[in-house]
Each structure stands twice: as structure tokens, then as C-alpha cells.
Length: 275
Ligand code: MGP
Ligand code: SAH
Image (cartoon, rainbow, N blue to C red):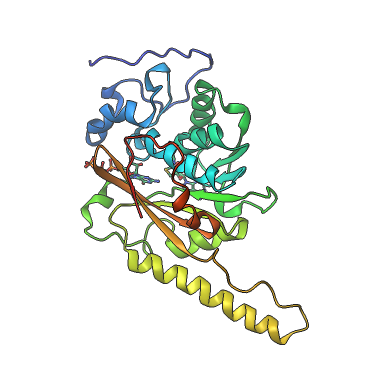
């Protein structure tokens, strides 16, 4: 047996749910190579962070999550929905920078992990945890932005030269963006580094076309014309790196797409951003 992580729960003394991994050998053989990523995912990994097998290859690494949260909060966001919160990699960093986080995941075990991990970082009081389906989330939170880090279909996403966002399983790009925009026009979407950018642009253009169609329909009616399409309709792509290796892309929509000049916020030096 390899070296076990301590089950030390420095601030929280609850029982870990089934599925939490405490040593390399607990991982599926094909996931074991990710064991050493633990401290990249969470700097407090050895303080008793809870992760399940699949989360070892799904969590947003802390330096990247910190960058995304810093950037989003610099755009004036104070309440954010984390639609696929997993074990809290993003929610915890959001909670360090904004007033309120609504964190939802359909897997109750992962929500328990996220709550526990947030306590280790001392930010649990800023996060409202929900077990449920993101697509059922009602627009009652008055959120300023929505963050999406959906499933990419496991590590096999790496085998594709160009990753098909429209055919992504179980949720494709169009359904994800439609559900997110019901909650806020300001969306950040975390996707594979090899994502098909043509599809990404086509979805954004399609959305704009639909919006402008709505505008002309409304022009013909007695309803006063809404504000003209403005700068909030754009897309900013950030290529996120760790140690000069690209790990993922974050696509920023709505008013989140206009902060590139504000990147004077202190960034983690490990994270390079190109737009
Ligand atoms: P990775 O599989 O470790 O790729 O994922 P890497 O490092 O380029 O490949 P390697 O062969 O050199 O190890 C990189 C990052 O993508 C992870 O840290 C996660 O943040 C993210 N990621 C990976 N997967 C499979 C998922 C997923 O299914 N959903 C989400 N939201 N993020 C994922
Ligand atoms: N960003 C997270 C990892 C997200 S992985 C972190 O850093 O911890 C993708 C997550 O989406 C998984 O936890 C999975 O349980 C969740 N998920 C899948 N379908 C969902 C749905 N319909 N609604 C909410 N969560 C869902």
C-alpha cells in the first residue's frame, strides 16, 4: 500500500461518504496517474480534502479556478451560480472573491464533498449548496453570472484533435448555453483546450441572430423597443495554462467578455492567459 493521506479533518469532523479517495490505491487503475495532481487541484489537499475517483480528472485546478474567480469578480459580479459544482474546485475560489455563490450538482456525494472542502477553506458560509439538476434551476437567485464546468465525457476527451462541443455528452453546447442564459446573460463556460472554436462562434452568432429577430418583432408591436444590441454581446476566450501547458479554455459571454483590459488584477503567476 502507498502512503495514505491523513483523514485529518482539521475543522470538520464528519464521516466521509462512500467513494471518497484517501490513497492512490483507492483509485481505479486508469485514474491512478492523477493521484499526484491532488495538490494542484487543491492547495489544502493534505488537510483532508474529499475527492471521488472521477473528480481527480475533473476538478478545476486551484490556480485556474482562482484566476477565473478573480477575473469574474473584477467585472463587478457579486452573486454567481456554479451550475456543475462537483467537489467545489470553482465554488471555493468564487466564495473567496464574491459575496454569494449558489453551487449545484446532481450528485449528493459530491455536494457533501464540496461542503466539506469549503469548510476546510473557511468559505462555507458564502456558498448555498443545492443537490439537483442545473437544467431545473429556477431564476430566483438574481445572479450576476453563471459558471459552467460540465462533464466532458471523461479523460477520453483528450483523444480528439478537435473536441465536438455540440455533440458533447451528456449535454451539448446549445442546451448548456440556453439554460445558462435563462439565469443570466453573463456566462463563463469551462471547456476542453481542443474545443471546436467554429462551433463556439456559431452558437454565439446564432444567439445574436435570434436576439435581433426578437428585436425587430418587438419593433412592430406596441412594446417599446428594447436597448439596441450593445457591447454585451461578445465572446472572450481565455486559454488557461499551468507551467506553460494549456489545460483548458474558459469562454466568457455577456459583460464578462469585456474585462480583458482589467487584467491588472493580481493573477497567480502560474496562470497565463491569452485571448
Ligand atoms: P487533463 O485530462 O488532466 O488534461 O485535464 P491534461 O493535463 O492536458 O492531460 P495530461 O494527459 O497531460 O494529464 C485538464 C483539466 O481539464 C483538468 O484539470 C480539469 O480541470 C479539466 N477537466 C478534465 N475533464 C475530463 C473534465 C470534465 O469532464 N469536466 C470538466 N468540467 N473539466 C474537466
Ligand atoms: N468544477 C467542478 C468539477 C465539475 S465536473 C470542480 O472543480 O469541482 C462536472 C460535474 O457536473 C460533476 O460533478 C457532475 O456530477 C455534475 N453534473 C452532471 N450533470 C449535472 C446536472 N444535470 N446538473 C448538475 N450537475 C451535474
